[in-house]
Length: 307
Length: 325
Image 1: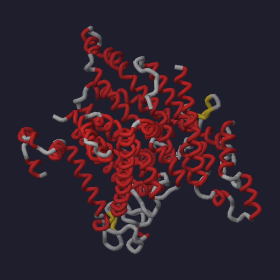
Image 2 (image 1 turned 90 degrees about the vertical axis):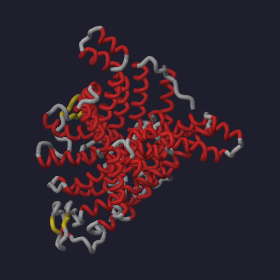
Image 3 (image 1 turned 135 degrees about the vertical axis):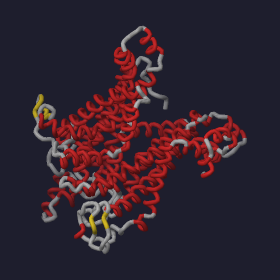
Image 4 (image 1 turned 90 degrees about the horizontal axis):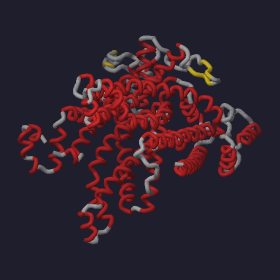
């Protein structure tokens, strides 16, 4: 990747023909500095989330490490044991910076897990609809149409009202909200691909349908799915935060960024802004960086824009 | 046309019925409302009387049938908590939500269309780029957090606006509204702005894309060649042709606004249907949850139908038929 970065633009253009598709995607992606910035920020956030227990100043959920006497201190205050609370503390005396690192971990995990699950279900439903056709297709697509005519937040709230709260139930709600986007997109992509010669050739070879669908059809439908999946991770994180803020999301034992913001809501009116403000900034940075990456991926993976 | 409306209405009734079934079964299988609604200190006799009064001793299908029979007559059960009919509880709060959503849409339209036009007419200017960057932010910012930040700045730091509630209302034809008094506006403006942000960003992008495209069309070149003033070319020729998608989106988004008002109402303690829903979910007040969902599904179905019909009236190229399948 580093050689690609160093290569001057005109050389890159001249050698395009010899590039592998992956190298072309990488070189197209790095052409946009804003997208590279977004990707860098996203990678930083992911690293912080993964290594949260190692780099956090304290473990915010270890009762031995927090002191109620430190509660609601403004950013930059010194703790009793000599450390500094760079982003202040919450009502329990937890270091906000550490709480945000741990919260980021939970928010990203829930967002990514629900997106992957929804992607798998949506792909299966969409490919089945496109390949089988007929009544099966009609039923699947009608469900998709009805679902997409309601806003995601409403469907998620209905499900939470029905299922109750809890991590598994929140992920179920997020998956249910998302799968329809994938099903619709992969179906339209698959319908186009299905008519091409290579699928016809595969059928003439009498390959089993599962082989044709997974080895021939699926790889050619993937680019638009990658773009939607990226956008949907951001949407899932935002939706989970909203549900947690409303008190209908993750349980208090797994404080995501949304729950941290909700926690600070009651102290906002007395001017203790940092308990809500900084988790919100972390949430915003996550969503913006994912959206920047998705924006560039859309251009890079769009065959119509390829030079 | 008539056949289309009848078919869509029938389809809508089926969707409503399926929703009522799903929601009823789901909601009535969650938790045990007896534990929540009846005083734990009550003796056995009182408990049984209360269970009987609420109809909780019947089997699930029986409860649903009596619910369905009531629903047909506009009776969606009584709230466990408020002891008033669930439907009237929701309809009571509906004007507050509708006023909030309408004000938000008004803000989005008044600001969004001119800003989008500006960005579309001068795509490479500093102002145009700033507007577009701002619209990306409008998509990315989590609504509830923006609401908190608005409270922080305008209520806590500056002390200009009240942080929650609806304030005094004035009766307009028997409906309490906020927009007739100065104090009402002070309560209304912050939640409405918060709710408007997403649609503002959406309208900016839509108007810009439309204007950008329309400027390259022959009819605009021809209008300019005729020597029409710039204002007339933009105001009449460009704007009129990009209005169709904008009107559609405004229509469809109105339903989304009512749904998203759930979040805004919770942040600003606005006494609308959305806040009622969240409170009811937390208290397991099931008749209210079911009634809310049926009301909002009805609102959505009506809006979708109205937009479809309006769209075909606005654009003669659109034929009213349903996609095969």
